[in-house]
Image (cartoon, rainbow, N blue to C red; front, side, top):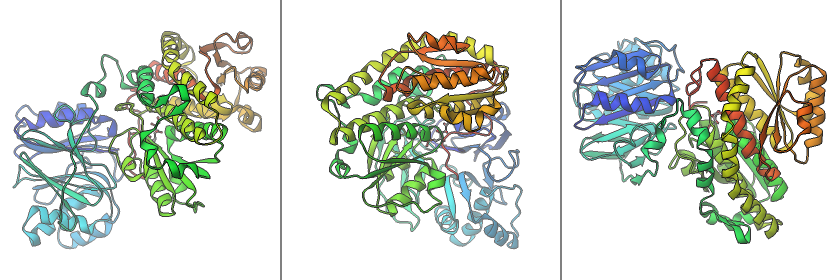
Length: 606
Ligand code: F6R
């Protein structure tokens, strides 16, 4: 959600920055902009391609800052595109976040004769630094003084034309990572634009600022005390952040599911004893034995993974579980005590609503655990313990492979906590063995992609879609509907199949099709009855059924078959055809599935 990128070194900065923006593009595509002290500023409305087309050949220099915008304050116009500057056009700021007290600072600066050109909160910061520079006479000190005055969230890249080699960044509630190269250094919102240059990074913490030049990086607190940052090596490979021959990241990431599942479980199962070995939970294993309640907090797709987790944990570990979206949890008065675990699920590890829920829970004495994909991210660092997904970078805005990995990670946690409690070794072994069989079963589903494409084409004129499921596949119905609406912009609604008769059934007619997840599990008969209710109202049905279930054909218009697995693991399989269906549906409409309108990845605002 907004991306910043900065470079200082010996290379052609424009090339490095524009390349970097391309790999950050999933963070925002309302506008893009670049500032190079020796060359000037170029901005464009829309995605980074528009900016590239506007940057002239001779736009050269060896340092600079760049930005991708996901609009919050002000329309997505060229004037509002970042970087923003002071009155003199010397100080330039690229910002991810929101300056909450911008209005009062702006009023104060207007009285001091500063002239503003944009509607953004960010521009205020450039002018504030200009003002403080008059007093401090030192770029670094002026930035620090300014950041001490602002309230809100920021991940920044700040350049000053009089000191072109130096870039300053600061972090408060929005991610910033430093990339440390050979005679070159980088600042970015996440590692993806840095990976092709270096794998050595330092994740900045809230309240820290960093000053980089080609040969140095210094980190300070807002009191100007030096901090020694800990360099880390990123495991992700550059190829993981590229499309690898696929037309879209989303399709590539769906197709990666078998590998992702293997990576999530690698080294984490002791099959013969039916145990999960989760190094990330070892330090709190004794505490986990006594836990009385789990609250899962997450947003969007990760929230739906949490709902599946609730069913798994209650059935197999016998622990009461509640699941809540982060944005609700943080503003009510949840009852939490020392026997409660707060479990955050987040691909990016930066979702502000989830992060704030975790902070609130910790303040109230809960043990905070994380299921996080992005290594070194804020949620990963602020939770007491947890497990990484190891799903690799997810670039497509619609989450796919991370969801598969989240479900897998939750099954591992269920095994871990269940075996600490009443789950038998035999049951543990069954779950472990079945997990190992899933990659092959997923391959079988992916092998049907042409069929799923033809189904998407057949239904592509539909303007509405109902998704229904029960028990473990109720959350998958919700997730299937979310996938379709977020990339196709059509109305899709997920619903527990038993709830249909309490309202949603009224919508059904011959133009309102239903995707029914009707696997051969403990609620199979009930699902068949619910499908009959739809059929009786002339509704079209696509059924997701277990291989060999012939009677489904008698009710459904079309059937997608998936292999049989344990009921608790079945969402891992049923999610995949729904992802592929949504993908091809949006493709059929000619939409850019990797960049759905109005959305961006890593939601670092409220
Ligand atoms: C939907 C989607 C979002 C995210 C949500 C949470 O396809 O991607 O709903 O799941 O914004 O993001 P993370 O997992 O990064 O916390």
